Length: 334
Ligand code: TYM
Image (cartoon, rainbow, N blue to C red):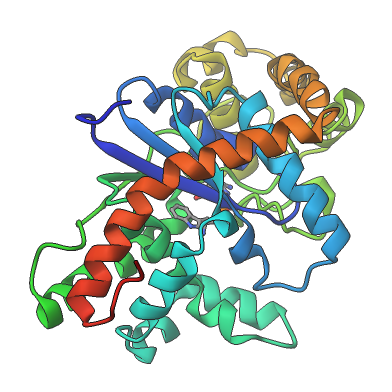
């Protein structure tokens, strides 16, 4: 399957619930890429352990994320869709790369700085999080990594790791990946505070729309989204950040340009736009939610698909790990 196609890899951390930000910034692009590339999409459950998790809730959320991937249109026949922890190769390569990563570079990661400022008990996993992410990517010799804007710095570290690797061991065993960041919607903002990104781990649930929110909740959240006191619908991210965010969401979901949408709302109030956008989001997510509900009824089937995905992923992962063992001087197990 797709042996000559370029390889794509991406994933999402299993915390909170997938949001419109994840959908627009990432999964919508993953979907578009699945015909032309050899795509690998996984749920990052090991990354989720960097913050304290309730074991029962985490297990349920792993099923839920996997089902949401499928419901959002990722095809497990065409792609390799799997669970990160089902392949021990991720943790193994992460350790080898950790031993190559300077502390100073991890200290500069803005996401670590932000998260550690909000958390009292910081664990070492939160600090080395980007190295595990690099292992995820390098294990599959990925050419392209479709992500939102917030992952740019992590991608840079991954690319630096390839350079450090080559400086120590020479070229050949790890491939240099590139970030693929979509033009529109690479940074969807919080609904109540449009100066920060929409985040699934936000404590205030009014800040995000989750993929599995009920229609009523979606309507309420979008209608109460923070906007300015002006009335003219124009795209001005600096002075009208809240409105600009709604227009971006509208544009991606409707496939209309922002200019066209602004024209449609000439002479109309923001309220009109919010009502229509809320309807559009509800309509977009309706078939997704129906499929999701169906999938969640049969966890056995989901586990089967997880196992098949892991079997497919293992071929590439083992191949890379073998090269890495040989290069570093470790004996690869028979
Ligand atoms: P995560 O789970 O935070 O987000 C998953 C994807 O959604 C994008 N995204 C957004 N895009 C636009 N606007 C937003 N408000 C928004 N919020 C999130 C993210 O950029 C991401 O593409 N570390 C990663 C998971 C990961 C990974 C990997 C990704 C682990 N290993 C290897 C790529 C390759 C993360 O926590 O994403």
